[in-house]
Image (cartoon, rainbow, N blue to C red):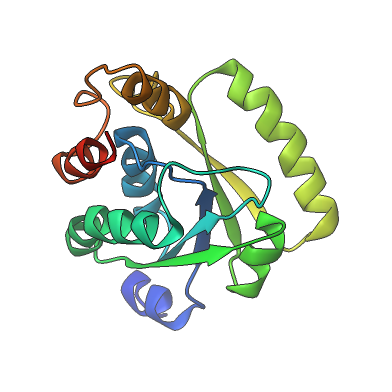
Length: 174
């Protein structure tokens, strides 16, 4: 009989896909990413580009911010983490990166209702990809990127909601 370690190394690597605009990446995002890294072997972070929206940061800036944030998480967890960009449906991007699960962060019941609808739609379009929900930690549950952008645009202090690296970039935007 194979040991658990042998069986784990012989099985197919589980790839997760976590998408968002990450404009900017927040402590809430990195909380979900850290938790997701504990349940998959490979984690692909997909930065969605919506041509109908004008982001605060360019795609290149968002990639750079995420890579700065993810390096320590990858080192801590031993998880292979990659950052990609995509347009179109997240479920199609997940499939293109051989994901077996889509990771979604939940802050509250409103998120859950919306995410359940999305999981149903994604399940119809890609039945082999499961959706896994990761509850945000209580300390970061209230953080949303759109609220961080609002704080910055009104001259407030976003430091409780983002890392030092991201804070420096936000200060450069002012």
